[in-house]
Image (cartoon, rainbow, N blue to C red):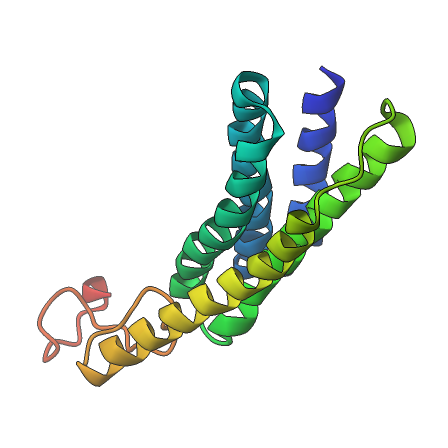
Length: 170
């Protein structure tokens, strides 16, 4: 209950402090990245021990921020690489905050493997590359004359013929 309440408060506070929906997208993506990583890591650790969790951390730390950065970048109007990088930065900050809370208030545990440090760098790299992929996709769409979801500069055309001056067409 307390954990669910904490995540709900976190979500409400992030929604309140985000200036636009674009900012909220990369925060949600970072939270989902860490939530999916934890959801995969717990059963792996219980069933197979620490070794597969380390591999999952390294692979997932690149793959999930990459996929979420592509998603965020498609919706961003500009600076897609920066938005993707922010997915990785916030995901890393969430992990570090959770691990520090566990270190301070949890039972004594072994130090984290060095692979986790590499995984944090891969979160940043995956996020930035995902933003780059989204940027290139957007450029390709613009060159083809089509507008992507993030293109806020597109012209609004009425649903009826453009030659009429009827207000109902808009």
